[in-house]
Amino acid sequence: MAVTGVLTVPVLVRRSVTGAHEAADRASRVSLSSLGFTRSGGSAAGAAEGAHAVVGPVDPGVRRRLDSLEQRLDDIPDDDEARLQLARLLENSHLLPEAVSAYRAYVDAVPDDADAWLDLGRALAASGDWDGAASATGALLALEPANPSALYNMGAIEANRGHYDEAAGWWRRVVQEAADSNLAKRASSSLERLARER
Image 1 (tube, rainbow, N blue to C red):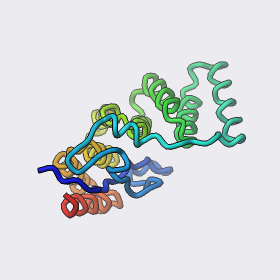
Image 2 (cartoon, rainbow, N blue to C red):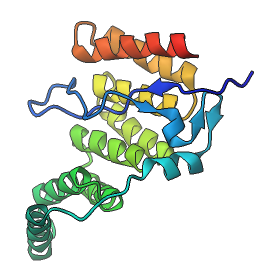
Image 3 (cartoon, one colour):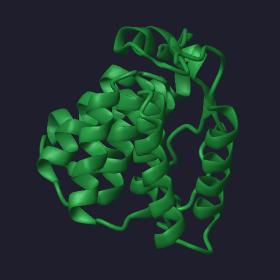
Image 4 (cartoon, one colour):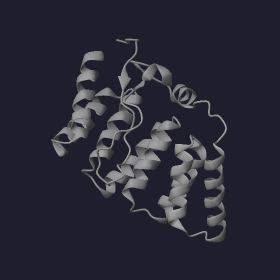
């Protein structure tokens, strides 16, 4: 039975500044309809089309910082820290294709950086590439199978792909793995919302 309507699902979480895995992201949820989805599923094309926001010009101060990091990488191509800073600044500036490229280059050089895989997965999801987001988040789970942020994000990815049973399974794991965390509370809330809105 195809049920149309708006099912709201959480967006992917970020890593925290302190390294804990329960940082809040900028927005608490995204509407599937804004990504071209209905409750019965949707298309990747619809997701990609709805995921791209109109981005205005980059702030001159940010542009100078981007130029500085790019120059640093021209001078020292194996400066992994500069590449990661560039990727994060590009993502924060909503320059998602460039951010994804920089994150990919970074994780190719530093494949054991769990936070970078989380960042790459989130940037891919923001670009509407749910398969890529699942792959990057899966790479993180290969490094840290109980990483609560990765488990939570896999739930959000699956919900955005219309795979609600799979999403619920990931969020249940968050509740089990990180029982007293803020992220477990968010996962519980997502499970309740999923049950209520389906």
